[in-house]
Structure formats: structure tokens, C-alpha cells
Image (tube, rainbow, N blue to C red; front, side, top):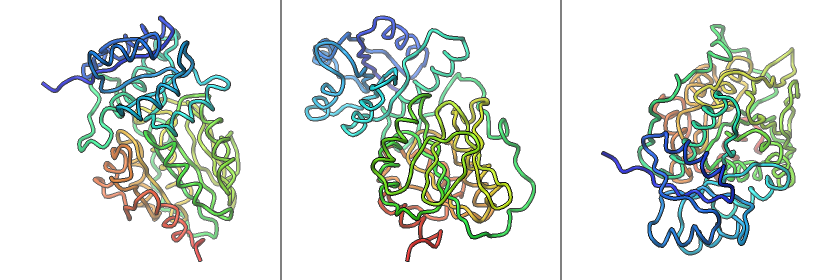
Length: 357
């Protein structure tokens, strides 16, 4: 029997510690090693036993989570998943956590409906497993979870042929664990005249707006959280809002996005598969698809559909991925035209879009 993933929960709220413990303990592959009310208590427990993964709140008494994260990474690096309410200034603080080495960010469990709790359980366990198996050769599969839906649940697969080539190019990008920093590297390398870009990054609700704002301040391209009916324009990046699917649509010569609710697809909302399928249908050979670091297989089938529709497809290579799950699954499906390191993705997609002189 494989060893369980040992998790240390660090949060000043007793309710959150209990809720996280219940969620993680429900997964047969995860064991809650201990809980701690602040970093000092956590440090004392780590002297007795070293966890595989730490979940860490940002705002705590005696020492804030960011300071504790910096100490962990400088003294004894352990995969850390930030657990934040993502409200107000917390979102900006959470981005600092990514810069200091946090693997992922999850939303604190809520005492809401049964459906919300179940969806939170899947998201939280996904984050913990991805953190524990960063750079692992084998990506673990979920057990005892609800049926895994495909993009059919949101958009049926088209039987028509891809449209003729047009002047405007569209780039569709999908990422998950490790994607926040990977997307920063990709988008910072793009010139202001880049083709229109649509992005799904697996993130909780209320987080993507702050993420887009941060990138907008760093990049030459404009970056914003998408709203329904936003036009896809050259020099602009639209990021799917957390907890909503985003589809590419076309009306005449105009590309735009549809933002809508719907069931989890490939256990995610937003789903990369949904974005990629809609891009295959409405952009065809006018598109470039990029699949980046992430746990699981969301986007693999959609990227295959893009390639079959005539799009050029790119996968981030294993060495530069935090988790090689999503690109690996796409490669296994023969959905990828070219595998490149993170720092070469921008150049490669621009070459395909005839934007690089």
C-alpha cells in the first residue's frame, strides 16, 4: 500500500482547521498529520514529523503566512498550498506567496450547500496531490469522486469542418498548478501587437480579477478578467473568471467570448477542455493552442480537437513544468505539434501567428 500524503494544516481559525481536516481526511490518499493555530505551533510540530504538504493561511497572529513561507523555503523547502479567503488585500498578498514558492492556492471551505462542499473537496484534494507530486513521473488519479464530465456537458462536439483561414489569429491557453507564474513568464514575453489570447487558469472565484490586474501591470499586452461578450482583440488577453466556463465564439469577422455557468468539466470550472473545444469549432486553423503546467488531464481532449480542426498546438515541456500532468496527457493523445520549454512558448506561438519578424 502506498504511503499517504501527510498534510500539516496551519490556520488561526478552529472552524477552518476542522473543515479542512474533514475534507482532506475523506480522501484515502491523504492523511492530516497535524493542525496548528499559527506558524510557531506549526514549527514545533514539524520538529517531531515533517509533512509532505503544508496548507497555510496568509493572515495569522504572531507571524503572517508569507513570512513563514519564506522561512520554510529558505531552511527546509516543503510544498506549500496557500489557503486564503481571497478577499480584499488578501488576493494581492497571495500573489506574493506564489513568488516565494507556494505551489497553489485554494479557497477556504464554506459551510454552504452539499454541492459546494463536494466541489470544494475535489478542488482541495487536487491541490494537495499536485503539491505532493510536483515533478512526479506518475500523476495520481482520483478515487471515489463524482463522474468526470467532458466538454459535452457544456458544448457538444461539432461535426462540421473548420472554417477557412482568416487574417486574425487566436491563441487559446490552458494551465493549472504552477500556471500563475508560468503565465506571467509567457505573457511578459509578448509584444503589444500580439494576437488576441484567451486563457483558462484553474483558480477559485474572486481570484482571477486580481490575477489579471497584476499581469496587466507587468505585461506589454493588456490583461483583464473576461466578462460575457468581451471582444477578443489583438494585444489583449482575456482570463476566464473563476467558477465560470469561458467559450470562444465568432460572429462574422468578430471573435468574442461567452462566459457562462455549468457543471464541472474534467472536474473544473472553468475548464480548459471547454475553451479548447469552442476554439476548435469557431477558430479552426486560425488558432494556436497552448497547454501548460497542471495536474490531471483537463485540456488534453480539447487540444486534440483543436489539432484535428487545423490549429497548431504547443505543450510546455516536462523540465519547466511544476506538474507535467496536463501536457503529458495531451502528448499521449497525440494532440501536440511541438513541445517546448516555458521560455520558448511565446516565440513559438508568435512564429505560428506570423507576428515574429
